[in-house]
Image (tube, rainbow, N blue to C red; front, side):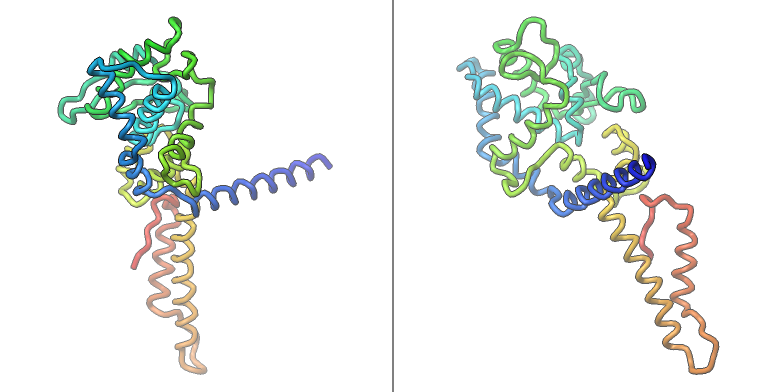
Length: 286
């Protein structure tokens, strides 16, 4: 009895999870949506405030502090396709000891703790020189006016304390709403993550591995979470094979043994070749 109940629960949760993933795929964030954020009045105002603080013209109110902080967090997040965890756990000391890569004019901030540290090691937040200098103004000038003395984390709430575990991701959705981007649906850290992973699916195996390594998850994780595009590709391949088989049977002379067409044979052979290929590497053959 208990076993049947457990199976029912698993079936129900599996259906709900699949439905959620498909719905998320239909309302996926587009690259253009992310690019719009930097052009909004919200973002331009945040950059202007940072410049005014840097020049010593003024201090920020709490609302202005929140706007500047959220702008920097969201920009860092989508430039790194990172989960909110690395931003949540990023330490001020680690930011101050960022490594500069001269060839690319970028800075790398190491984050010791995040969701997949045990299996993937420390996360790296990579920022260009312009973004780094804005975060530096935040860290050196803006943050000290709001942070409590004992606080070690780089990004803090307006009360001066670190973000509670698992809450920093909410700032992403609220920031995009305030900026007026994608107001018809929520832009979350997960939807941004899926945007880059879905795009990476079209790249070479090596490129996918490089991106997955930086995002601190496996390529199989991306495949499992972006089932819509993968299933569509596989369904199209299967349909073409079946169509070739049917056409071969229809075109056979009456009374003669039915023989699959050459295209069907090639399609089946092609399918056999892909039997041992992971789903993520499956490519349609024209």
